[in-house]
Length: 134
Image (cartoon, rainbow, N blue to C red; front, side):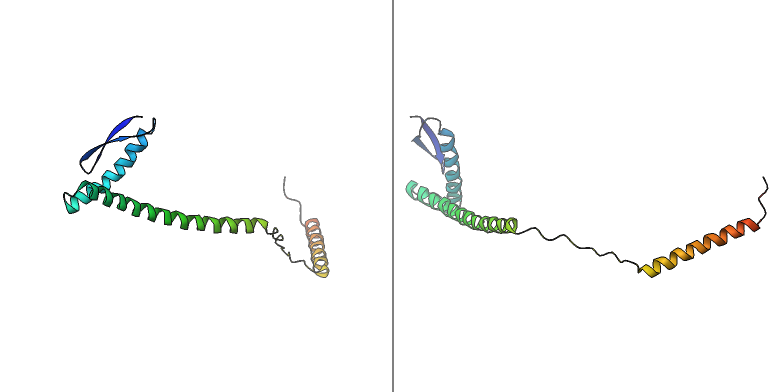
């Protein structure tokens, strides 16, 4: 079982851990040391047990806040997943219906008649006009 020397609040400690877990131990010790340094800067020198207790409590408080945030985010995620499932379960909306205005038959017939008359007038005029010079 490997022994690792960690420093917390300026004090060295020999700690044993499982093989391969040294990195995790050092990471945890670094967090605890950060809290202990804050205490030492604010309060000054204090007994080892008190420093470790206070630093541990500060970390526990931070952890509790993080867990509260995770629970709130988990609840929010659950609500959003339920809303998404509800939206997916709904039937597809009916296609939008677009109505195109239709001209009455009498109007289209009148327009066709006017076009025919205009073409007849154009043809009659072109017959009366002299041919353009070539």
